[in-house]
Length: 103
Image (cartoon, rainbow, N blue to C red; front, side, top):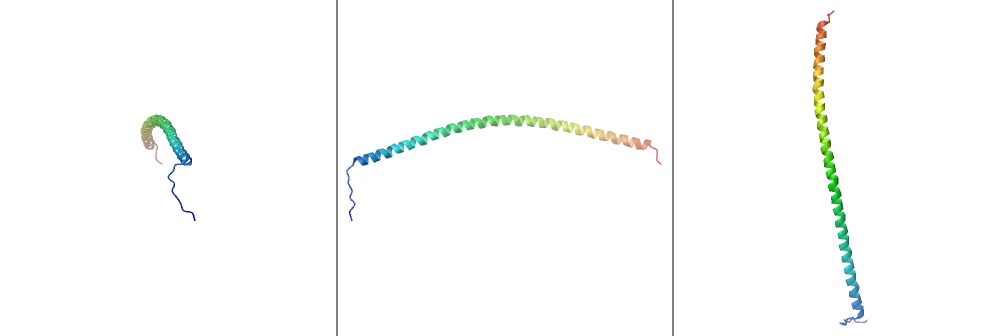
């Protein structure tokens, strides 16, 4: 069985291997950095879009709240008018009962 020996000499194969590993590491690093930059740009675009949509929805909500307030006020006025009409009808019915002869 052959013995393993350590050869301290640097060969062309060693240099090529180191160069390939270095180039691969640099390429991987550049890929990661470029993807990170792309993601940051996409996030910025999304944040801008969300901010614009949120502002539009806030305006819509304010408009809806104003409309709901107006409807509530109108409903309260109608309710008050209805109570007044019911009271008037009750008085008229009471007067009609007093005017009708009883058998």
